[in-house]
Image (cartoon, rainbow, N blue to C red):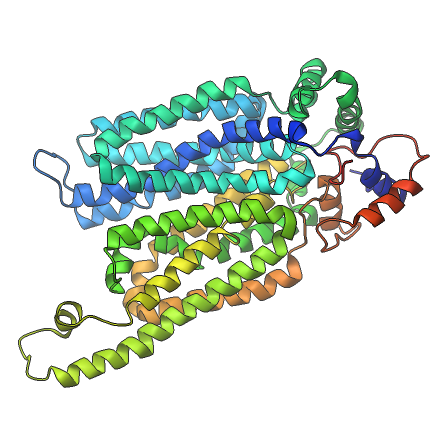
Length: 543
């Protein structure tokens, strides 16, 4: 794609298709994203369901015919994460011909089947099969979900609306914690089907992506889609934006006619720095996010709170953890539009790193000194283990410290680093690679998630809590430093400007929005220019 000239950049900032920044313009985009989020809510349920399934099949109640051994249970919490990358890698290829909306509807089918298998399961193979389906469907939904949001939203709304994706997954996980306290796990599986059906029905009432429609030469439908998405407005209002989208795909068609892309040329797109640089950024974001301690905390919350002697019931502590994750995600959604992604990321990684190191300090020094004092005091208790004495005979006056620190980690990571890669996926890749790159980037994210969960037990055995959380802390702090140099501020920026940044054409500034005075000066310079701005979306500073 040809880079923007300086004149075109100014025009891109000044024209903005004449859209107004008001509630009417934002509402349909909010509705469309909310409907899409029903799908992610259901996916979050599949991630949280093993949390209530594992204790139920490890120590089954009377009448339950499923009883799993520890070796089998270890796969319950991870088998879906292994399969998700496969679905992610296939996501763009399989779902792109269907369209964003239809693809999102179709991936609900394996979810529906999986919940039924869970409910009627009679052996371990049934559980593994259901988990395989949820993982595959979770991977397949990545490309249509992420590209749909990027293609229907305006830049000044894109960051916040994209952040709601992780928020809804988090809420989905939390619902399983809550449902697990109220219902038996087989009943929960049936309840979850309701949300799958609602998602399919609701998606019938939102429009298809205008970009996908134009790529299929369905221009009238693309016009209607834009009218709906920009506030149920007239054809004249969205005409300029539609022309830009059409111009984008005409240029792509012209390039294809001049020289049809071979398989080698398509592969070269994924070896170009316009893909590799943002892919490294997203992958590194996933790495820091998963190894910040939050992924293992969510998976092994009950065990961790018990191990750290939480001053409240470990199950209630897990519920509080889920609530703080939701509040953190909401905070990100509310603040990212104003602060941008860089400040939230710096605050999130730095705070999480400090908290993890403090947990390590507590475990290595404060608790150790307490144990030493207990050992001295209870020398006569030869037949009682030290752990029994610590846990049962004494109240640890400092047990609130690691609990509070980990709850802070849950909040700050959900408000920043855990959401960052999911927001970036919809923004940083070029038009030619966006759909396929979304699947590949999501795949590496789930691989990191699987690894951090899988090696956690081994890390505890070899490094102890002290070494494990020291490692988490240093990863967060080093990540904060690296992000300072490699993370551009993409909030409120047009996708073409982000693409040009990674192509080395023109670097993005770290400011989120220009001042009103600067906007007016640039708008004055471009008042007499003709034409419209470059393709993907209107600029952020619409009047």
